[in-house]
Image 1 (cartoon, rainbow, N blue to C red):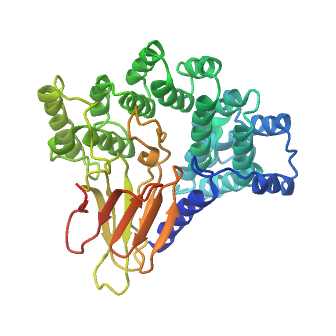
Image 2 (tube, one colour):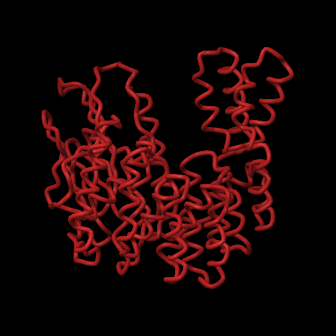
Length: 436
């Protein structure tokens, strides 16, 4: 169990330390050096060509599942052709390949791992991150188009998140009239990743007419698009998105259900139903959905999203872990949100490697404009907050400080004000916020 937990923690901490924040000036020196070592030219045209070259072949994508099946073919040439085509899919083949790498068939496992290794080797994720950041920092001509084109091919959550933040920064800093056409057009793109980011940005930066276009995304065929559309419209104080979020509690992947539930609990506050999505049990999710549907029927007309809210309370899912070897209790990992309620948890004995940890994936955007909302993107960040013996401090993208120590995690803003706090008590079933 320790290995997956610590890998996720390292990835998250590295993201906090290495990625530029809105509160700190971006220094391109390290990114330029990364690209020099990778022998990639650093002018804007070369960086654009580099990302476009790594974008997946969209014609091959239509046959992705077929290629995955062929990894275990009895015919050598079919296997080799499948490997070649899946490598050409870049990031868009990774999720399917990760599942194939756990197949019971030894040939499928071996070839899937070959593909994953080659994709990682070819992609050079550090160089990709550097290229994205530099194009955004320079506000390069055509950067929005380049990032939208590359987004579905992102190899991991960190790159996907960097592109989301980059697109939002470009939309914020450039003339919206120039940025809007490409993002509004992406609302109808055939790729869900592009529709999702477009809905999230246009929903909170666009005009009323453009937000009406985002409203149509609430019925999109892909649940991640519906989630991001709902998230952004809530940022614009539009309660019409709430029924779509309630719909995501049932039927959507559990990580999307958790995020929709967090947004709903943020809106409802103390009136939130007791029922939870929990571990994804169908009956449990049905009860949660029905409870929220009843809540909406009773409160939909009167709920006021513009009413003042507690300054510390913002929507955000945090994954906490307690595995103190001296505590004499089972190890535990659990998911909590803005109100401190435990949404999901697992306990295990030391050295038990069988527990499965959820992947939250990439979230939406921090909105720095207080006229919109306090929403931020922790909703999708796989945020591992360990509770170590010694104190650790990490800086977030919006220049907040996250301080973790045994038994508690506290977040403060740039002025030192507490905005979120959670305290761990052994032998209890809740994380209780002391600032509720």
